[in-house]
Image (tube, rainbow, N blue to C red; front, side):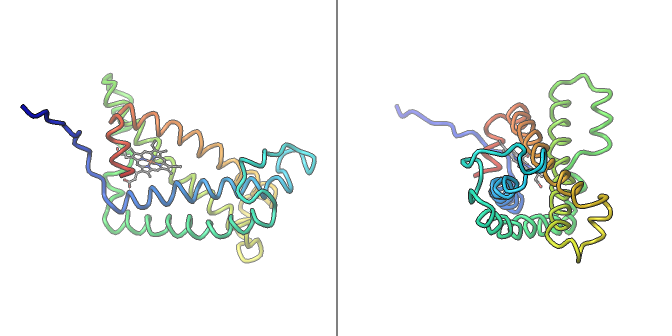
Length: 197
Ligand code: HEM
């Protein structure tokens, strides 16, 4: 008698969504690491003598290499977000992939834990989109403050822009933790595998 092995059936994910997801994750970590190397040269909080981050958390270690990495991955991160946006709109993915009005109603009315977790998960990964766009927008304003003077003005000056840009990091990390926990809660490891393989 031969033993049969049952491979779990993975949920189907679109290839385009998986490519976006991988490139986003890699470029985001590179942006965070190199951003911290730049930050250490002139901390946002507490002035030049303020809090800085250990070298092993940074990509590049120092200001000049940190800037090189940051400006390289800026293109990878920004263009990846751009084509994903085009993809989401041209395929009308936005109509069913993100949190919807009926999801929010279910959150208020439903007592079904499965349904509620599903909505929480959609809510969390939908929330990434404005946060990533905010990181890009504030970054653009700091990169070319003259050409994008309107961005600097909208945020009420350079220092505010830096602070908001910096705060997108902890926001992304909190969302990432919630997203990972909810992905496993909602669809177990097979859902996670479906997005990464
Ligand atoms: C900052 C990092 C991340 C961002 C911005 C992000 C964002 C997203 C977005 C926007 C989607 C929907 C994509 C689409 O189908 O169009 C998605 C799906 C997904 N992500 Fe992430 N993600 C991140 C990290 C992670 C991590 C670390 C995990 C796992 C531990 C993960 C697991 C998943 C899974 C399983 C799905 C599919 C959900 C489903 O089909 O219901 N993601 N993510």
